[in-house]
Length: 70
Image (cartoon, rainbow, N blue to C red; front, side, top):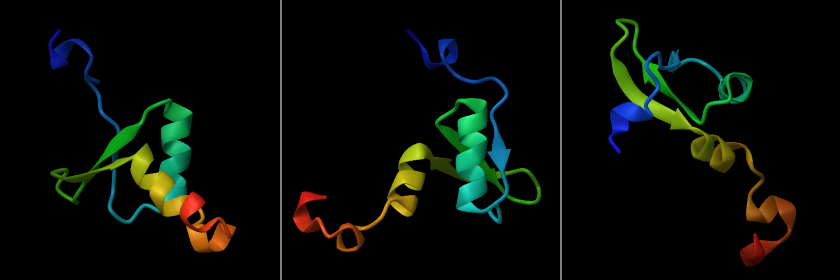
């Protein structure tokens, strides 16, 4: 199998100024796991993924009181 057989042909793009909450909503609405981050010229400058959002939005171990268990 090659990547072209599973890739998205019309990828979702977001600006770097979009909030992480808005990106999380967009990914959920579109049922996708990542989006390209593009600059004002439409050139890719990065990727934001579900994993990035989980790490950013999940409470830290200190906040949950679970310590190393978290």
